[in-house]
Image (spheres, rainbow, N blue to C red):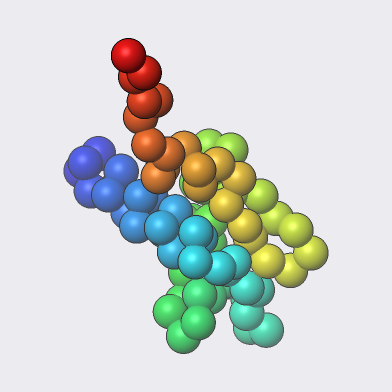
Length: 74
């Protein structure tokens, strides 16, 4: 179960790298036509991986997810 939760968080962080989640008029969030549940958004906000700016959620630390390991110079 915990592995599935981690997979879901990585999936939604990847979406945040491509663009923000936008607030739906009827409540909740969306990315394009994909509906994002409030529970997912709350978990990303609580972990500090996303932040709310105006009516959109943007990735806070998306660079951590895709950053390359430090290169070793000889």
